[in-house]
Each structure stands twice: as structure tokens, then as C-alpha cells.
Image (cartoon, rainbow, N blue to C red; front, side):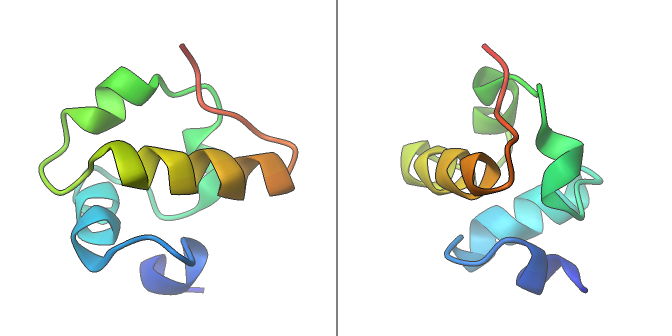
Length: 64
């Protein structure tokens, strides 16, 4: 699974931002603060919402 398939529903800029930061699969985001992800160029509030939903489907969640 490549980084674009790992994060369905996420915009391409947000996917690239995660990949550039070394996040290639949802499990790596478990416990990561949303504020940290928002600092990534290409990640915005909508991307955080999509990630929260994606992680919740897998029993995971973002940190504070």
C-alpha cells in the first residue's frame, strides 16, 4: 500500500505533507497531536477531520 492509498479521502497536498513528514500509514498517526499535523504545509482543518474519521474506523485516534 502506498501513501496515496493509505489515506483515502485526503487531499493530495495533505497526503504529500504526511509522506514528507514520514507518515505512510494511519497507525503511525495514533496519538499524534492534531496541532502538530496542522503545522505541516498542505494539511488543514478538513484534512484533520478526514484523518480523525479514518483513524476512528481503525480504532485509533489523534492526540490532543
